[in-house]
Amino acid sequence: RKEPDSVEVNGVAFVEFAASADEAEDLASLLRVLGFRKTGKHRTKRVDRYSQGAINLVINTERQGFAHSSHAVHGMSAYALGLDVADAHAAFERALALGAAPFEQPAGPSGISMPAVRGVGGDILYFVDNKPGLAGIWDEEFDPVDDAGASGGAGLLRFDHVAQTMNFDEMLTWLLFYTSILKAKKTPVVDIIDPSGIVRSQVVENEAGSLRITMNGAENRRTLAGHFLAEKFGSSMQHLAFETDDIFRTAEVLRALFL
Image 1 (cartoon, rainbow, N blue to C red):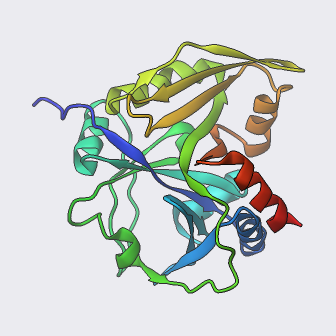
Image 2: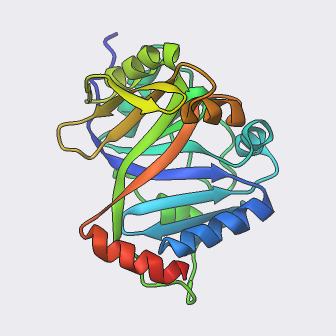
């Protein structure tokens, strides 16, 4: 049978970090300095949600399951990317039809099973949508938290882009992965000059600008990208960029929060 068509992306729904308890405290402190506040605590798991604008960051300190396994290999890292798409199950079915490896683990008594596949570096790519079953994931799985000590935010609105770093010879595979499953295109390759060499960079994005994934290909271990691969023992998300309507105002607020 014919696989589903490629799927529209509305944006990045969330990024999830795997961390130890001590690392989670440090990461939470950093997020507060960036104007995030704790907005939810998972009902059955050691998982917390931090939010600002339409940005959701999740910190997972579970001592079992894939997050724990990922942490054992890579240390603290952003190991899961959630995309808000027009049809999550259609995106999942298309990914499987094109050879992606499915990801599954028990959701738990109060958990929602999100369709997911293995992504860059063996990390997880989740698909969510606004249809019944997935639309209320934050309300269904998380108890709200009144974070009275948090700031009023720094004006960060949404994800601008997510950067993923890999060996250069993997880039073509993952560019094809994203552009085959999603309604997205790739930009021309740009050479990023590093003091220790060249990093090849290419972007997967859609027409609306709601999706932008920067792919950085390292050709040697001496560059910043290459050092990241060696330090994290493989490909993964290297950085997150957030959008603001007033970057100078945001910088002022961040400076005040930092001081």
